[in-house]
Length: 160
View (cartoon, rainbow, N blue to C red):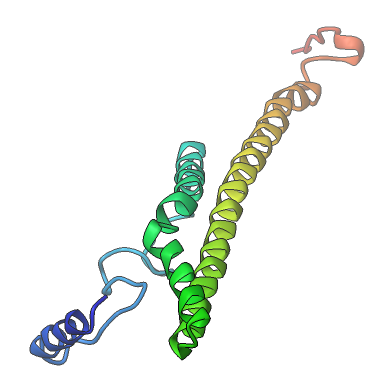
C-alpha cells in the first residue's frame, strides 16, 4: 500500500464522523458474536478441502512468481555495488536476503495450512463415522431391553 493510499483511507475514515474502525468483526446485529443464537460452528469437508487446495496452489506459485527477475536482480545489483565499494550494495543484499527469508516463511505457512486442512477434513470425517456407528447401535440396545422378548429372543406372551 502506498503512503498516499493510506492517507486517503485515513481521510475517508475521518469524514465518516465518529464511526470507529472495527477490526475482524461485524457491527452488532449483523451476525457473528456469541449471543446471536447462530448455533454451533459448522464446516463441511468440501470447505476444508477448498481452503487446503487454495493454500497448496498458492504455495506452488509463490516462489516462481514472487521471486521475479526484479527480486533476483536486487541481489545481483547488491553484489555489483559492493564490488564497486558502494555502501548501498550491502543494503540491497540485505533486502534480497530478507525477501527470500520472508518468502520462505510465507511458503511454510501455506504448506502448514494445506496440511492442516487435509488433516482436519480426515479427522472430522473419521469422527462423524465413529458417531454414526455409535448411534446406529442404539437400536440394537433398545431391542435388548424390549420386554416383549424373553431370553434368547423367545417371544413372550402376556396374560390378560
